[in-house]
Length: 340
Image (cartoon, rainbow, N blue to C red; front, side, top):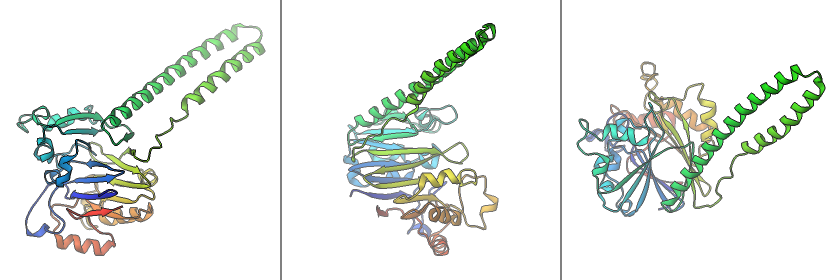
């Protein structure tokens, strides 16, 4: 079903099972977004071990990792999707600790932590660094088109920096020449004449490239959040619908203004709210939120729908039921499908 979000896993830190987690589930973070005719997976916790059956028929599946902590990655080597010959899994992740997407995943999928590496699965697993803005099209070539555009943008930025440095050197030389030149007025006119075309060139270079207007394109924007080791906050947009994924991020006072702008008016906000008010003071450095702060953030950013995610493994169904009643916001349930 298009324009839906399915919660494959909403548990944080560690998966669990048993009678106390039947309603909200025990699988760790994994979210399936279906928008504009395309499926996109967010994180690969143990929820990825039990995907919808029709997902196995998708030939190219993008997987965007918010970060590579083990609870967000553990389902990858056990998913039936990677056991399909002919399937292609495109994994995107921002660089962390000097490691790109591939190096991060290989840290886990290699001895002594895991016996099987990414190259040994039947599926074709490909790795890509996550840019601040990514466009996903309805065919597999779109990701490469986006990466080419991102590389051109990066090269343009490097070219601008070099031109600026050269302009600075030229300006210094002109200033030195001017001090030797008896005609100060002529030197100033020369500098002004040089600066005008340089400024015009810089202004032209700094105009942003126009984004694709195809309604079948999914725009994935990312920004850095506050979490030990780093985390990518995600916003997926297409066809007038938007999903914002704020897992594993403390909404600090410094981050909050930018985060509000990033999430504003989204169709669905999935926001980390792992702790109660009583638990929060001892866990402020863990990289998560209290569920009360998450609920307030949802109201402040005017999210049309909200689900609290990354449930603490020590919180039973009864605890989460009571928390939802307390804040007036539902907690995500494993297996739940939300219509955007």
